[in-house]
Amino acid sequence: MIVKRLKKPVALRIYDALNARMTLTAAQQRERQSYQRGYEGEVQLGNHFEKMPFDCLVLQDLQLKESGVQVQIDVLLLTGNTIHLYEVKNYSGSYDFQDDALHTQADFVVDPLAQTRKSKPLIYNLVRKWGYRFQVEECAIFINPNFYIYQLPRDKPFVFHHQLPHHFGQTGQGVWIDESHKRLAQKLLNCHLHDYRPHELPRYEYAQLKKGIYCSQCYSFAHTNTRQTRICTCRYKETIREAIQRTAEEFRLLFPERKMTTSVIYDWCGREYYKQRIQEVMQEHFTVYGKWGGTYYT
Ligand SMILES: [Zn+2]
Image (cartoon, rainbow, N blue to C red; front, side):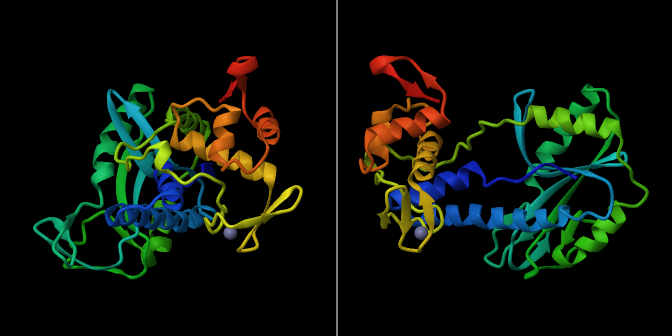
């Protein structure tokens, strides 16, 4: 059972919004593509969890902080007496295993277990603190079928795409879940940092971003309106109210520290729709603070 489902990561949502509204540098484009590939890999692996052949609880994309250490866990799978931490890698091509490290063809060294190396002791200590006894195992899953490692020793906790059915078959032998697993999953879920923002994001200012509403499917700003509906050049249709709400949410994502007022969202949406309409959407979907001239929304 999936207790916490994967959502599009904050960093990728920010990169996609910026890509529509400003010109990213080549390095920023590469970073965005890297987030996109990673997300696609996690979505692919997520499909396997929909039909697991054994009882388990799955938490995808957890952000935890304990004793000042913050970790990101792609997948935490809870079953039997073990917590499995999976790191998902969407690498493609062939790599070499040399001197206990993974080398790309261009001879860069990558560490597919970098995150679990941090998260494993944190999870181990956290569950003990809460009075549970689980062993913690780490594993990197290479989700892309077009990936190969030369000279890989057999003892590495690596699982390739074609090995997934076998791996989960082994993992699921003689396991069970009971109330203690459910309580622990809930405790972990309660610790998840919802408002997490990655540190390494591109710098951007409100003034430099293109204003207006873009299509949620193709990111184009070009559209026509009927009385209630926006129709993109790609033919995607959305009610104008939905489009305004979505674009206000995007403003909150990009500028979490700024107050959302009707005037601010009116400007952000490209001054295309009447303030009256913006205000109605804001009142319906956000919490209203203040009165008269000073009203803002969260
Ligand atoms: Zn479109």
